[in-house]
Length: 398
Figure 1 (cartoon, helix red, strand yellow):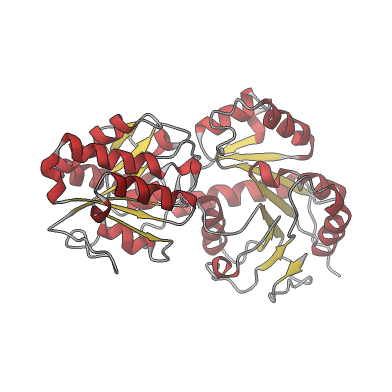
Figure 2 (tube, helix red, strand yellow):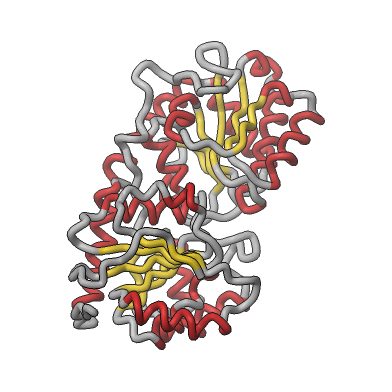
């Protein structure tokens, strides 16, 4: 167990929120924690982050506050019963008012939080992984029900997940708050004069029309289907070969697979796969269309960022994607793992760029009006305050 160099002031009267995740690294869930901590009023709460495996130092620097502590458990694979005594001691030393776990991999921390007497215990469901795409995995349902007595309140990041908690985990509706991720519409906004060149990218407007995606390149994100759909689009509309280009940003095992698919089809030179980037807002401003081909999603930060950037969004109709994308208005929804349907959408938007611009403008408006950062932070803060009052929490200083 390790702790970074930002100590927590035990004499600070502000309640402490301990955010628990499996790994604190690049990802939508983790980026949501960064946004929440950075935008919640500093006078309201102190914050700390506990990673069951590892806090990645470079990613933790995205949190701008200097009073946030980071803990890495470095837990090996398997259940963490052996860590419970140390966790209970750590929690009793930290004295958090709230322990907020995220997703199934962090749920087991609810038991040591209860044993340590943490006043408020909250769990968030942010999305599903490749082992439970439709929520039907009975083992995962059983595990969630087993820990349900230790959780006092839940956050669900989509209507689909809220329904799952009610129907499969049997959580009372009054114990669930549905909250959407918020997007920084000032950071993510369209370029003033249309898509701008992306640093290092060999393609740029007006010569090219760029379709792209951003995210970890792993099975559940399914970028290989996008690569196949790009190939199929050029087969269906060969004239697009002169200007249609593909941008796949992210690192992971699917990167090499996607490149191999493109190379085998003879279109590798029409695509750019730069790996992970830290300038996502600038990448978005260089695209004409954003695609999210995931097999499962909660509420996608990248969809929201694309919408705020004025991009039409083509996304699979899974999880919370339909909560964000209005089909035919701000983009298009297609079945998951359907190369033909995705290719048809790409061909339609690339062939009618005026429609793509119109959808992007509508998406930008939705991002500003429905999915603001302020709305997200206000919802979390209101539930935190409600649960703290309910627990009759009083700060305990050393």
